[in-house]
Length: 382
Image 1: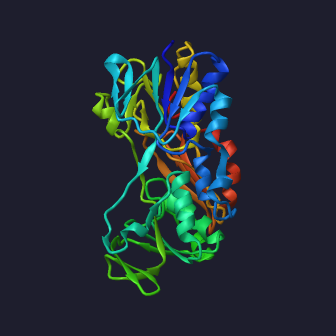
Image 2 (image 1 turned 90 degrees about the horizontal axis):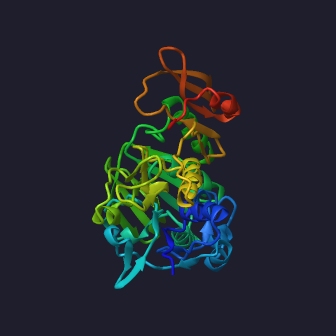
Image 3 (image 1 turned 45 degrees about the vertical axis):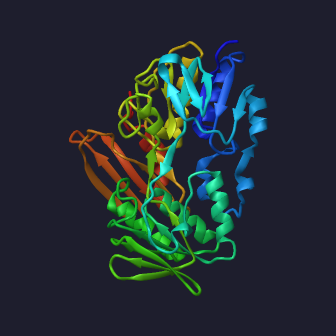
């Protein structure tokens, strides 16, 4: 029997490369392996679930059995790969060896965790997949006060969503503004003001030192001496690409698993895409580059070697109280920012010395200009 194409991971990256591959090749055996329950869902929807009053089951689009049938594939759930043997084109699941024709690493990123002192560390919830979301929803039932660790993109999206779901929200982050690595300060101020208008309370600068149980909930002791009363915490302080298993197999890693423009790792017949991959030096944790990679990699797996290219990749942030679209300037470029507008409606543009547009941040009504501005943006990977 022919060795299968094996995909590790059944998130957006894994299932989408499988779908695209099946459009081109309906016969090659296909095996998907996942450590979770294998349900198909869109990860960006995790930060819209409370506003829509959706349980985890309501965010699921298909069970693994239906996905296996749709993809003419075997889907192995709750299964952890313990090692990869590139020299013999096989991987290990405990003592079981599984041969592959090609191997696709699509296992994503894990939440960054900080150790929390005190007696309530188990009430800090990361939300990185559907099972995390289900655990947090169960814990949050009947509760009212949620403290968010982190004021980046995910923290702000969760803040907006949880407030729409009826929760009181505090955000704690050791930075001077929201989304510090992504946003011009003027745009950040607009988003923060929008969330504060909904009732969010920001504690920017300090970190969480200790989490203590009290008679009626929790006390979060911050490094500046402030104490925030809450019922449970969400950790949204960032994601770290999963590279350990790849590094142990001898694949080159940096921030992510290093791949070339064909998404090939440093070993033949092993590819990576999505949050775990660093494509020609870029590790972009967003949907648009992931989908672009899935289409290109499917072509390569089907025998038509296809290099990936990224056009402009603006990011739409799900903060409905203050709509936001941002396209950070490409790495290695230098420009000067100009800001127009006021209040919630900010247009911040970054241009180089010749006046060429490099990037933007648009909030409020200014997001209407994104389509016109996108035409001016340079590609991220030409």
